[in-house]
Length: 122
Image (cartoon, helix red, strand yellow):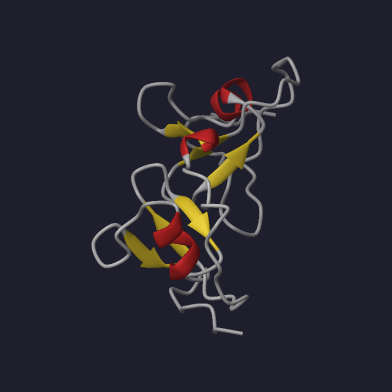
């Protein structure tokens, strides 16, 4: 229709600012999730992330790189989410992050909403 897709169009995004994968790219539906970009967008695998415009060199990390919470640690069920490490691992609260091996003072930040506000503790 006469549009230059490079300068006249933008990618469709969800409510978090995550781009939808292009519909004309076929990806195998394997489940090797990745987290991409500053928005922490999650895709089923690197193919879908690439179809959404993310580079395979550094834009995404495998979600499975997040250390598991230690099974023998008791934490209160308080929802005060934190994001930790380069892999942007999310834990329900600082206690769970610490049990996964993170120093929550130096390696974690409070999760915020789209306006930069912290989620209220519950």
